[in-house]
Length: 220
Ligand code: AP5
Image (cartoon, rainbow, N blue to C red; front, top):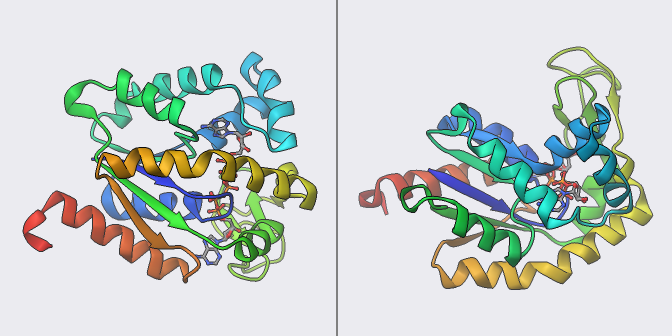
């Protein structure tokens, strides 16, 4: 199973992917996480991507697509994966369709629909573990101990692109590309919409249900 999670910044793509990967044994691949690792390690790719990311702009397709195609060739992705943050536009979706062999095409696309007020509340309160990448929210999903990761005990930080001005630009950048991308997967009959303003556990159960129905159509 190869699944794409689409949605605006703060829709919960990372949160849902991490939890879904535990329930359905798929590998979580986040282009945002891979890019942030490259920035932290000061690789050539990281240096090229950093300015785009800090401004909330998309990193050029050529850089991101090559990075993603390299990642999905890794043996751990052989039995399936969840794509979080890729594709971001029709050009990236076409690259995937062109590069993936016939029996390895994307099977299911879940669009996490989220209202703008919810996006802003979620992103401004998000905190991320500096070591293991676990996600928290100051109000919605607070850590047990202030500013400390429940999973590994490291300090939490605020992403540089979660500042108010950058959040607004990220939403604009997303809105520019989103409808065309949604239309692209809708025409392929792969798109399923979920109201992602709901509680994270409710959203997760709906995604698991879609995956199970895909794997066993008799359940529909
Ligand atoms: P990326 O890291 O992909 O950022 P994004 O798409 O803006 O999405 P986010 O990670 O901000 O949000 P999310 O939907 O994962 O929400 P989360 O689960 O964290 O990309 C960053 C940058 O990298 C881009 O701007 C771009 O520059 C570059 N980039 C990446 N991919 C690229 C590509 N393909 N092409 C070009 N450039 C690319 O949740 C948010 C918060 O809400 C958390 O605090 C969480 O605890 C909370 N929360 C989540 N769900 C719920 C819920 N249901 N109820 C209550 N709280 C919730």
